[in-house]
Image (cartoon, rainbow, N blue to C red):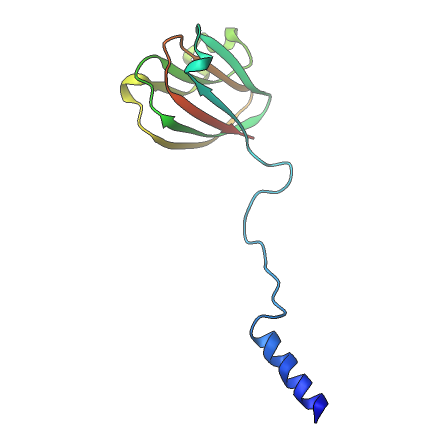
Amino acid sequence: MKKTIITILGAIIIALGGGYSALQLGGVGIGSEYSYTQLSSTNASGTVLVLGHSGNSTLGSVTITEPATAGYFNVFNATSTTHSTSTAGLVAEFDSSNDVVGTYTFDSAVTSGIFFEVSDAFNGEYTVTWR
């Protein structure tokens, strides 16, 4: 009798989720996490060129948390200032005249690297992700 009750209670516990183990349905594997950099007016004492990542990578997104009222911010598929002087490597361009708060998802492959150009008048706050 005692054995039967324990068996029934065990079955009820399993049926109600006591033996449930969560299955991960999504996410990013180790080594595929996004890196990020935050750019703001403190970066803009002069036109600043910043290498975010060198080599093959993916530009994930640009999040504008505070729109710029002056200046511009550009993202290039480049590794140096010589590459970024041409618009051929331009991946994204944000000008203060059309900045809107939000996240702009690119998920675009770049082959040279991710290079940022922040103008001296830039006064917004952006976060850029890549992997």
